[in-house]
Amino acid sequence: MKGVRFSWMTLVVTGAVAAASCGKPSAPPKAPVPVTVTTAVRGEAPYTVTANGMVEPVQAVSVQSQVGGVLTTVRFREGDDVLAGQVLFEVDPIPYRAAMQQARAVLARDQAQYESARRDADRYAALAQKDFVTKSQADQATANAAALKAVVQADQANVETAQFNLDNATIRAPVSGKTGSLLVRQGNLVRPGAPTPLVVINQINPILVRFAVPERELQMVQRYSQKGALRATARPGAGTGAGIVGTLSFVDNGVDTTTGTVTLKARFENNEHLLWPGQFVPVSLELYRQADAVLVPTEAIQTGQDGPFVFFIDAKGMAQVQQVETGRQVGVLTVVDKGLKGGERVVVDGQSRLTVGAKVEVKDAAKAADARVAVPAPAKP
Image (cartoon, rainbow, N blue to C red; front, side, top):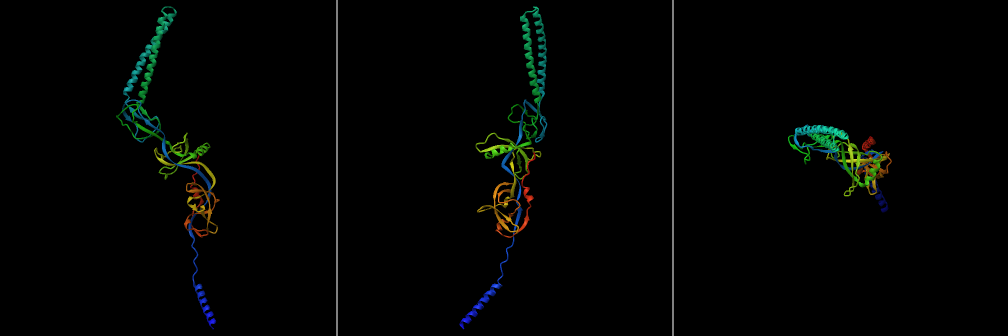
């Protein structure tokens, strides 16, 4: 009887446990993880060398007076664009005009004396042949003519000097460019070789950007520059402005032993005057373009214990992991050397909440065309 009661109690307890188990609710399925994805694309990946550069004019000329005198006229305003040969200043020409007239008068006088002496020498030479005068007298007449000829030549040199001084009383722009501050004002006395120039002219169209690259890049710069002009891009405004495209124009003939760098210069047309002398600008020099490279946004690359990897979305809409080998960065993109073939949907935002096999909800599918925009177009010849 006791055994029967025990069995009955066991059935009661078992039934109660079974009833309790049937009444407990099951765990709800996990919600999809919202992520942002884009497509790994294939395209050209430029190899670029970046550096900080300084803008400098093609020519910088300090205009000075070659004659002394009072500065009577200034024919431009500070900051004006001027052309080569344009009149900038005038120095009082009166003393130089008077010196020119005097030099010409002296030349005319000595020229007349020389002509007379030359005729006398010719006559004495003819008379000496007939023994009407001695040979010594004929030689003396010839020597007098030669001396006066030398005097005339000296007078001609004095006239040229006087003309030079008179011409330089009008000071012209030696090059085309933009003028700076007027350093000597009208009414001041100027002289040759003064420590302060009258004005400085900078040629800024075209303009140069000087920058340095590590010597390890020199061989590649030399190799690819032989195949054609290398594209250089400068970004004024601390790198936030629009890129200005130019070409490499100069490679220095030596390596700076103190820094281990080589100085390069790139030439830019600068039609809009966005580059200014003395300005610091980021510069990138494109050496070549890798064709058919796999590119993904840099934020898609994650780093784990086994190295770089990306999350991608499979055909079932689930997150999977792919180990990759990465190369250089190209703007906002990174070159993937191994691991991706192109066309994969990779996650660029929301990776922190993902696990392998997790269901995802794509909240913003970036198009592959958007990623290609980040790769600069090749330079036009």
